[in-house]
Length: 62
Image (cartoon, rainbow, N blue to C red; front, side, top):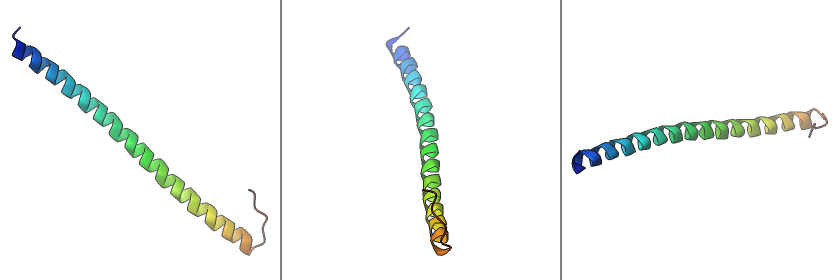
């Protein structure tokens, strides 16, 4: 096998590994963004619940 063929094969292997890792990281990033958005909604919802409880003199469950 010529050195150029070896280098091409190694380059292809490395590119495939890079593409796979990139895909994995994109999925992980989407999951983190989703979790962050959910936490933001939870926080806002808790503030609304607290306001309603205060307005109605309901003891907080915290």
